[in-house]
Amino acid sequence: MTSWFTRVLSALALLLMGAAASVAGTLTWDFSYTDTATGGSVVSASGVLTTSDTLDSLGGYDILAISGTRNLDSITGLAGPAGTAQTLSTDGAVYFDNVLYQSAPQVDYWGLYFSTAPTGDFNVYSVGDVYYEYSDFGNVPGTQVDFSATEVPEPATLGLLGLGLGAVGLMRRRKTA
Image 1 (cartoon, rainbow, N blue to C red):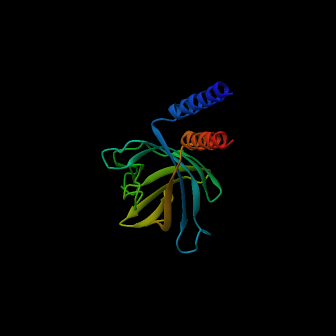
Image 2: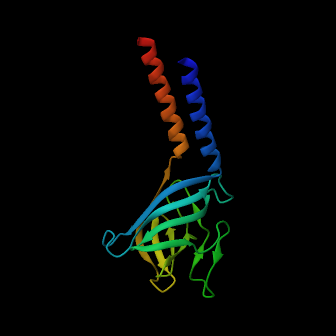
């Protein structure tokens, strides 16, 4: 019985470590934002951000991918690469660096720039601790929004925690029997 139990635990641990290795190098974040004036009846967005797992030269995590919805339109991806701040238009109206920070403000003045289908491109940025959304089709100077992003624990980490708690419970049960 003991050798069977040990083999099963070992196999599960190896499986979970393999799953953890496959997502190594990235972090997953749930994000959302709504306009502050109406509490989301004008602007509402939510989804998932995938970032690098190491801080970049700006002290944040480079955003590698985005998915979700904005006002029921599908977010199709980032509208530009992460890292160095870039200007998108000849008049200098849209800037982005696609970097996420752990504490407020979670996006900086350069912001997060993404595309939706069929609406267009949007930039979420902050001035101080106030967030705005700017669209490439003219809500200048931007709609004030409440923005938040929360890191999602890796499934493999939760699985290992559950496996450990289960093993402790089984060992305790065996000890009392």
